[in-house]
Amino acid sequence: MDEKIKKTMDKLRENRMKPFFAQSREELFDIVRELVKSDKLITAGGSMTLKESGVTELLMKEFGAAYLDRSAGKTKEEVDEIMRKAFVSDSFFASANAITENGELYNVDGNGNRVSAMIFGPRQVVIVAGVNKIVKDLEEAKLRVEKIAAPKNTVRLNCETPCAKKGECMHCHAPARICCSYVTLAHQRVPDRIKVIIVNENLGY
Ligand code: SF4
Image 1 (tube, rainbow, N blue to C red):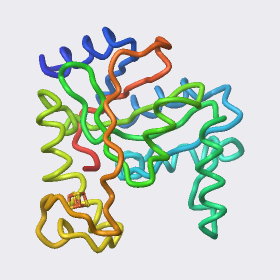
Image 2 (tube, rainbow, N blue to C red; image 1 turned 180 degrees about the horizontal axis):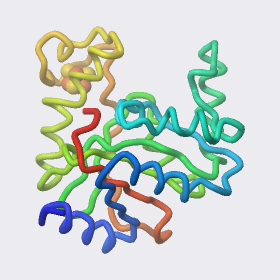
Image 3 (cartoon, rainbow, N blue to C red; image 1 turned 90 degrees about the vertical axis):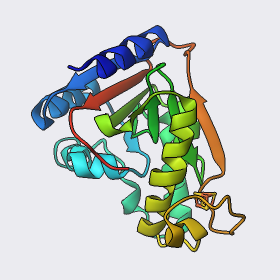
């Protein structure tokens, strides 16, 4: 494990989050299995990392009875209802837009369902993130969102925003803007409620 990852994990611990390091997909899946083995309700926020890493598929295949996937919602009302269930779930899965070497999780949301469930509600929050999400500090985290995460997400989600065309943030006021709530999770009241699994590969954006 390189120094940057080690330092980030130490700082996450200092902020009372529980870090894990997965050298491989197999290690990642074993950590996830262990964390959710007694869960009755598992939910997740929208995340490319969860898809790319195979975590979404694992939850569907092995924990299908407990896992509530929001793609099961056919209408906006149904999807909203599934999102609300995250607040009473045993585990809520998501990724982070950035993790700082100071042990902070930085996220920018459109709907806000992801950041709000990270802050309060689910018994535990499981963050899965590739090493590409680690940045030096909050300034770099903000730049990462403006130059990488948000523009790529607007393309993926077909949003009519200037960054989808320009490839970087234009600080828009478009109706489809996906940057609405800027949340930094730092020192936690409830120790180890937030688990952070850092995976030794590049995942998502
Ligand atoms: S504020 Fe607007 S232009 Fe900037 S990243 Fe967000 S959606 Fe794109």
